Image (tube, rainbow, N blue to C red; front, side, top):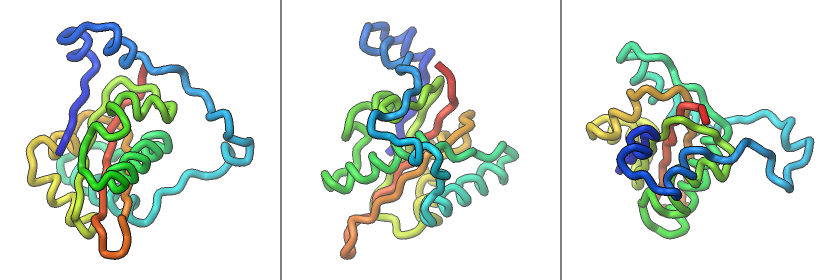
Length: 172
């Protein structure tokens, strides 16, 4: 499944106070329980997440596009979404709220967003191959975004592996 979220289209197509509020996320502030040592820790992708980033950027390189930069805030949102899909045993874009509310909840100020989700693929290569075989997912991977967040959650014990990519262009 894929979701594309273009702010200008939404604002003009569906003007409402709720959607307008989503186009201007709150300014970035650290979580109240975040300590100084947590802020200073270096952000690092897991091995699975790094593999997804490498395969994704390989597709972009082959198309002559700039590489994505991993965003800590988008990755936190993607990890939470992959975990939520596993917890509910459901592949859905709407678990935990809209894409815009989920990334805003992690302090990401954005101009454009999109998301790819998947379930059941065993490797990063499998999931990228699956996404690249779908025109909508492919459009997100090769889209005009600059940052990416990746989340992979393995339900364990032979359970389903859930995958999330969130693409963003900062702004707001």
